[in-house]
Length: 455
Image (cartoon, rainbow, N blue to C red; front, top):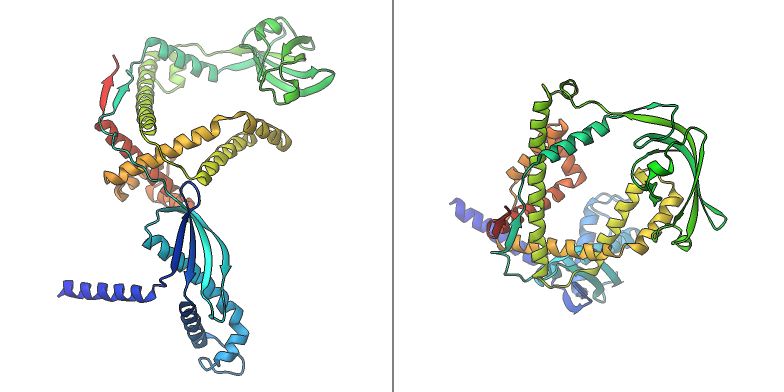
């Protein structure tokens, strides 16, 4: 009995949906890679019927002084609300007709359509016409994704790895105390400096701080710093020449000889904690033996993650090499712009002035020829993995998403419910779902691959 009732309800729903259809006339043309231009026409009788229906609904609800609710003459409503009704019907028919065309023509679209040339006759004497340009998802064809030949890097933590990591931790814990002597390697030096070329001051910086190590001076290669600054004390001045790099911000000075003038303000000596049990206890370990053991475990996990990431990258590279399809150019451009936007945000977070950021961005756009290539690779990988996921019916369940969110929530000291609500509110949950599905797809491909384990 229940099945019969469900079938009847479904039949009624299908019949209603059929009655609500607009049945627009459409002409489809290619408008470039992954683009379709749709010329859509909604019959005049459909426009008239929708206008009539809208007035009917309006007359039942609207209140006009001098008339009882539900008894407003249509002629009065037309005068008062005609433009509003026309705009409402036009907007409704436009979106419904486009949705019908996309569904009936089985167009797998992405992004928002671009609508042009809308012609709408509020008197319904003529059909409604407009064009819509839509972006479609690329058509991917790939069969050779099983049996890929991959190589997993060996995961081994050497004694020197632990030593280097502990040295890095010591460096972070270093303190600096003022000294009266001259500059030595690894000292922290406060200074004013200027950079001059062809009589023009290109940089004039006050109260800069620099660790005396290596050959780099705020992005300029000047030679060994401990030799250039070695022995200099507070108030001493140093002058040296250098060739400006080929990527120097001011293009007209690239490759030219410049003069760097430095005035020492103060010198501070680096003091590192000793590698002993006392220091280990400050880091909440019993002794150095436990610290080294736990450091080894952390490094092993990091190397395992790095090895898996490189394995996944091999998968992407081989999939990209095995496919050839057009990409939506608008999507490529938006990915490139997103990359440049991230670069801008990074500079702003580091406190660069607006004018300096703008100048740097001009240089980055001019020099970074890989941005578009990287965007194309990323998109090809995304669409190829999505195609494989669809083909192999690989999906992410809500339970899997909640388990992932639970792990993230624990890391930030929040409840899974709080984190899930935040992700829903900000739209991050959709990105998480896509990332998890992509990872599951890569894991599936690796399971089906021939993986050589490095010795």
